Length: 124
Image (cartoon, rainbow, N blue to C red; front, side):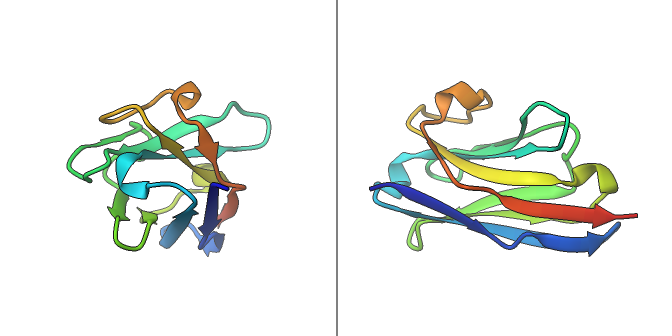
């Protein structure tokens, strides 16, 4: 049974930092492209960042570029999202997802496995 479990969310002041983690089990993690998405109330689910299976290729949404870094540790079956200079508009539930499509993958429809999400709240 495949599981993706996010952690690391919380309440932080604007300008602060958080590091989200997503621990994967039940799949050959190193074969999967990983992505992070977020969903804010009243808005559509939004792509945040993606990382190829090797970690060699990344892609970020324009709204987070320069502030957020995605990384992975294939030995620990974990993908991370380091978020700096957080803004109130970053407030959302953040989800990690796994895709067998190679490279960097932006479309949520290409991701087969999803975590349950972790709440990030940024206060002004």
